[in-house]
Length: 221
Figure 1 (tube, rainbow, N blue to C red):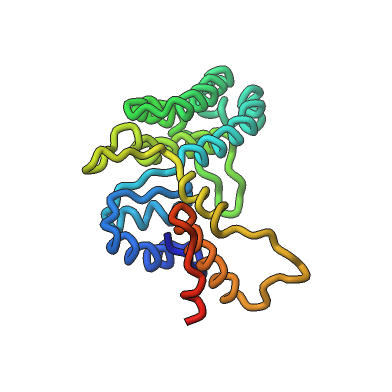
Figure 2: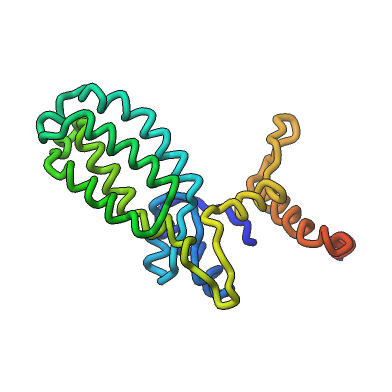
């Protein structure tokens, strides 16, 4: 585990952080949340990429809850403009939720077909808001492009038959156990560097929990 203060979430910053770690451990797969920067970094470093299925499912379900009542009544008339019936759009949105739950690699072709149904939806004019049909077009396109990163865990096996569980829960669990602290307004960190140092110390100590505990005397040398 590495604990660092990353100054930004752009791809260049993330690459400078991830590349030496990936090289030092001989990484084959980068597992991350759905942030676009990680996708760029994985591709540039030649790493396979697994996007956390839990993040994508939650985000998709929220979008479906928002979009379903709107498409049911074609709230802005944009579905009618491209010849798609509201009932068809509702069925597509519902089906998207089913696909995101099942996450079978071969289902990516079905997403492509759903995306094509909305290809005539025009993008918004500069400074304008996207209409409903175009939002569906982009949603199906995004999930289609994401599909191989979302379903990689189904088939990937490491050299010793290692498997991925499709989430970044291992990383977030480690953060929760070893790094996170409740902010204390009266005793908070006055210097950001100290927060980094303490998080590193806690993570280091945690590595020895099952080995008799850390030798804190080392810190006094």
